[in-house]
Image 1 (cartoon, rainbow, N blue to C red):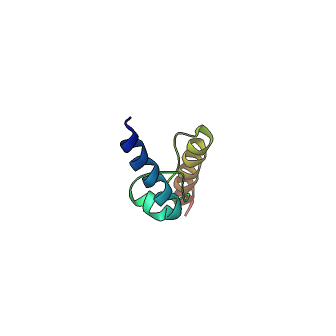
Image 2 (tube, rainbow, N blue to C red; image 1 turned 90 degrees about the vertical axis):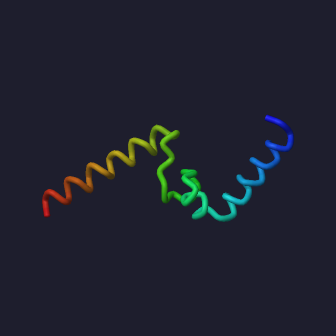
Length: 61
């Protein structure tokens, strides 16, 4: 990556850290916990477990 491209990428990361909801809107997970970060195996497993629990609750209602 060129120096300018790296600088631009770093600036985007800084802005997304300041405004985590914007990160979710852009599809960047793991910053505000609105989107699961599937690159983390534990968080991916937790998301699947939550989905199954929601399905189970809807069937029990």
